[in-house]
Length: 222
Image 1 (cartoon, rainbow, N blue to C red):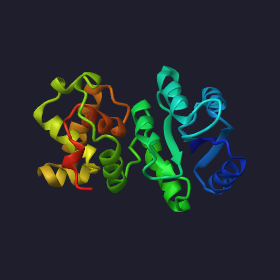
Image 2: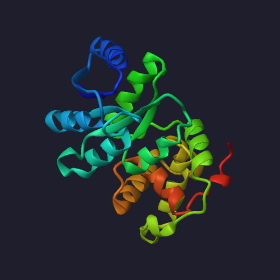
Image 3: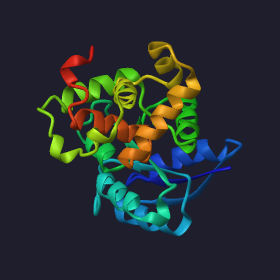
Image 4: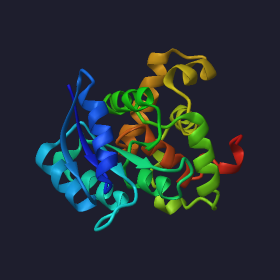
């Protein structure tokens, strides 16, 4: 059973998401919040598997709520998915940097929402290759700030290569094919890179890759 918390200042939006999720076997909505502060409180009380959080809310933004959730060791297993109205919302990358595991458009298809929740609950990043490239290319085209992303020197050559491929939106299977290695070996390299960098999930590898300059936005085909 995947336990979910909904955080959005629009009651109608929360009701719509709840109706969809409550009708699905294997998913349980365990709480709701009408703003970021309420969301953090509900997450603390319920410790869900996934928290769906709107990016723009009164009292406390979704980004600050994400940052506070991620900062608490007791909530380390909670995966945050940011809800946004626009695929290129300028706040999305800030949310990923704050610790979100991905994002979903509010008008996403029901099947995609359910799939996304399942993906994030398994500890993977909810970042499609096309949207990731567009997002990164538009909002991270500034020069890299290596001082804000320490740890590059701890990665082996293989781990750097794998991290760069993760940043381009490739799955473990696609990484394996690209590098001519087994999917298990690809997964191992990804896991080791995450461990060395203290990354919660693949989304954090994406952030690291661009902030460290390991991958440049201009090098990605948009």
